[in-house]
Image (cartoon, rainbow, N blue to C red; front, side):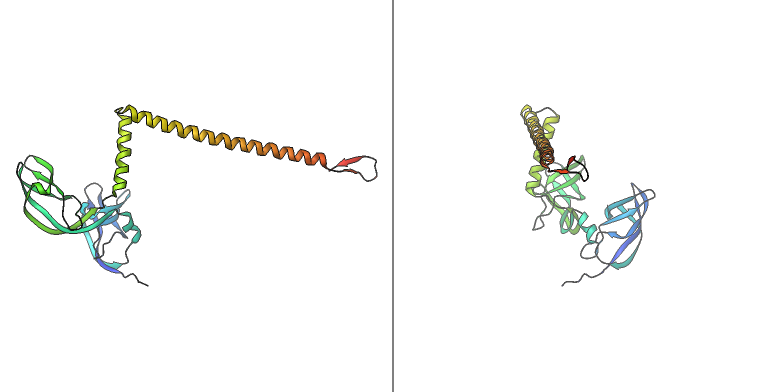
Length: 234
């Protein structure tokens, strides 16, 4: 059986956020990579606690070295992974000229570490460019947190639902509205039919119970009361 080991790591205790101000990291309530790198903290600010704040959004004011086990619950909350790869810094575009890649703003690297696109700041503004369309003037090896890619099935389902709802809201598709209303109508009719059957069954069961009680009462033997000529039915 594999035993977990405590990890030594640098852990922030006091931080500053541009949005929330000064805060204090809740002990051991943070994510941690295999090498001990902390990526997200739960931070207590003056009036509230903010969970899973990325380290990139915090200025570390105080930190110290300590050790503890991985917080598996916190790690599971983050839909990200740590990726080390070659990343372009300075590129040359045939139309826009020289530009500088915005840190961390690029496609998820594939299995070979290749990156399909970057967000690049040129003189005129920021453009999303395909890697194959530029000449990389300077790149470096680094690592940072990346969002996990969703499975194709999830993306297709989300896009279908999103487009379907947009079409209905924006009244762009009569067919979509008709399909939507038809589906709602069928669901309502089905639910009502099920409810009617349930009520009918309940009513029938109640009537049968009363009928059975009546029959049992009528079928009860007539017994004479002690000391009298009268009879009584149980």
